Image (cartoon, rainbow, N blue to C red; front, side):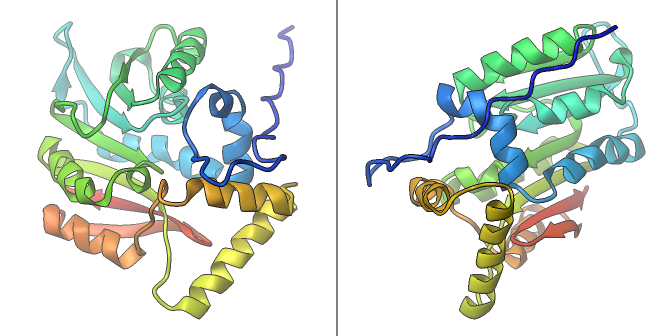
Length: 257
């Protein structure tokens, strides 16, 4: 009988006051509690992950050749953190059908993702790469996932990266872009943000924790409007793109090449 898996450590990073200049970073402390943090902080995260294999099965057509000369579906996960995208995909694809290249700039994230994925999916072709997603040369691919990643990049780098993604995708390939967004109408945006904080309160976060994380993310996580995301996708070449999921201020777009 398999042993029950231990629950991930509870997110307690902001239970005590922080220095006013402290900034959020994907370090060892965040890595340790990241699954709990995401579960309690990103509405709909589990549903978004669960749909990725469904999209991949529909739109990835084994068009790439791997090192063994076999035809596979190649997927990039840009800003992979602990490898949740790779985990979701590997659980629904046979090892010989998929090649995943998961990239993140955080060494602690990559190290933990490598450990977890090797434990559960040692036969799958999953390459963990510690690098800046803006500097990696992409191979031809069927699917690219940017899951809560673009918002952490400097705004002047976002269009350049998306254009490189468009160029790397084969005809028929897809891009999944999931982001936290804001509204231009101040009253509507304030209402939606407060309901998001209500969501966090319902998941056990205190006022100090909500305030502390908000301050730590200032000028680190910079959002765009949903309309601007669509405009930028059109600018880089995607003729067809639609919002397939939205929950409060979080939205996910699928773009087709």
